[in-house]
Amino acid sequence: MKYDINDFILKYQDADFLTLIVEVTKEVQHLDARYMRLKRNEYDEGLGYYRDHVGDFLFYLNSGMVPAGIKLTGLQKFLPIIENLVNKGQFKPEALNVFK
Image 1 (cartoon, rainbow, N blue to C red):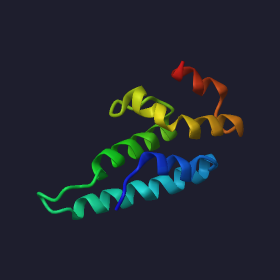
Image 2 (tube, one colour):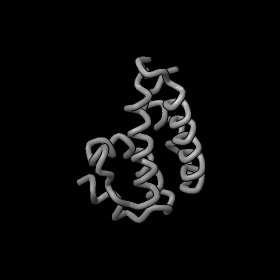
Image 3 (cartoon, helix red, strand yellow):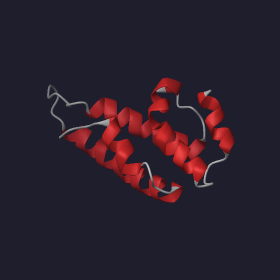
Image 4 (spheres, one colour):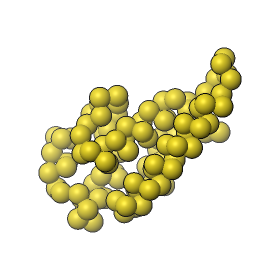
């Protein structure tokens, strides 16, 4: 399976906030289950990196705080989704201040 942050962003770029919360939570749970099924020495094909970013993005959606794991540089990858939420009025414009 291919784990690509850019594919994730394209998939959810136009999603509403509530859709993001529900769907990204499901995706994180699915990724956690897949990770648990990996054998000890099996290559994860980028699953860990992808899960860290998606999970920390979910943390940001829930808390509004920059996650300690991926930090601001990792969160910037999700900027198109965040900008869309601001444009829809589902996030305050101040949410973009952290990226300046």
